[in-house]
Length: 414
Image (cartoon, rainbow, N blue to C red; front, side, top):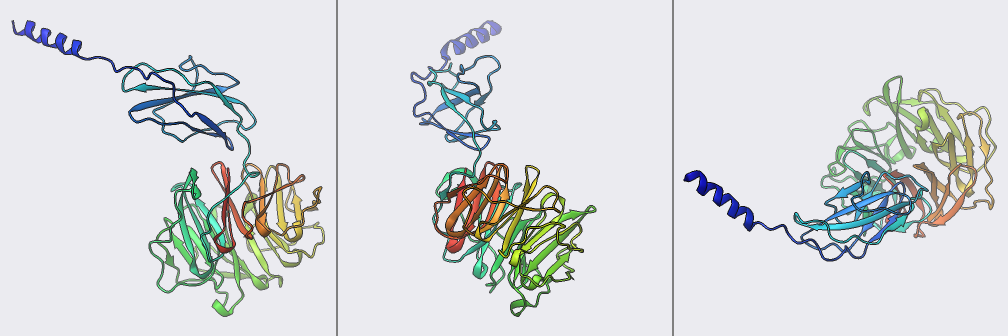
């Protein structure tokens, strides 16, 4: 009798359960915006519904068709990646209500991912101080910008954020050494920590971009009365880390640990930037100065370099080429870091270029918010960052370039 009663109870419970009704309408407001190797999908999200995105290369797609890639339980906006730039994709959405069957599907939308760097959005100024450097920690997904008078801002990378663009919020550090007001000329991420360089040779480090520690072993450049220090880089040489700081008067200092610093022979000309593209150091500076080094100890002039009196400001490597940029639109390229060619785009570039980075293409930023970009380092196009402030530094994060500059300027290109 007990077994019969238990079975009857189970039957009654099952009969009381009813599958929730499917949504009566398709999701509304579907839009697909192109990005670099990705797209951003947005729609009018309603509470209580579970949304599905189906997509594939081509001009059409059917929801829940066999083999069609899908994203389940998504929230608007949703970034869809990785996709191939220049390839058209079709997208369709539907929704379920709890455990219901799927409701009607949206019309199919198509979009083609494309390279970033050509279209920019400027954020509100973080001023009043000039921002001179920016770095990205891919593990924490965090950005750090530094500038004059000890200015530091940290922000979590947020591709879909529009205010501020590309960052959830820019915030000052939670902890910084008391009384620190030195101008910060550069910042980098070493793989384990952020490292900021002061123009007086001071070194600040931070594991998270929020809590900063002042090193007791600054670059021995002479402090506030010594030559200005302008740039910092690190590289791996013979399986060992080496840091390089450069500054005015051609001063070069190296360190294996940010503790012990050694001076290299100065060049005489001010050095504005040092980087470690493609396994070797490149330093650039006043009067067309360009130095390379495999070990940060011996620095040499390239075998062949076009003569220019314009200051050279930055270097990068990508698509098989080194590229150096400088004042008055100067662009030098090299496939081996030894023999260099002067590039004269048509129409020629005239604005000062202060920094360059290769992400998915070459992007250089500079005077009055101007941007120059190229896919091959030979043919260049120009655009505006949306700001008229001079831009001093640029980096590439997933699918996005970010530049910073004078009076707290910041701009992104997605």
